[in-house]
Length: 263
Image (cartoon, rainbow, N blue to C red):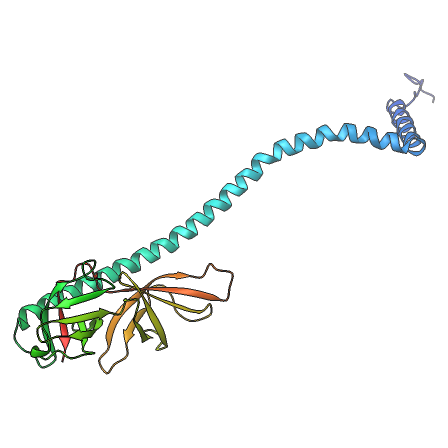
């Protein structure tokens, strides 16, 4: 049995679109073959605005990335500063304890003789006495000798007696520019010849790989361990192979009112 078709099979509705796309493709291909330079030029003229838009869109994101990188660097530097600040507070606390010890010793000794120390009043100090020196109110009649060690407290040494008269003594602090002394790093045991720079400061230049860091304590080499100063700055910014170590006496030389002279 034959059934009549409702409609005749027609052409595919997408056929014309496919033919049109193929024709356009062939035209573009032929144009790029015969007119390659002009086609490239036209391509550049079309793509240039697109690249400009891309750059404008991406630039803010690049700035955001730089901001977060800068913020991370600031956070790391802030952590380092906080650690240094905490160490400095500990050093300050230790120094306060030493001052209390100094006051206790003065109270117990007074002007009485002690088997180890002579108590002395400071008659003159920087900036009145020049070149990091102190003038004391005791001299050879009291048992002071040339080269006697001078202490701020029982274990904080600050200088040596440079000159002595029957009634007075001149103390040259280790920070005096004329002083050079062999001092030892308490942490490592390494010894260095360190020069005074004035104002309670000393300085040392060593190779950059030398194990001396911020906060290291220097001691005077003797049977009795006597601390002298601490590293407060390490300058390793130079392009050379050396770094400069800056050291400061534990004593504030402008506020010293009394000392102890070792017998």
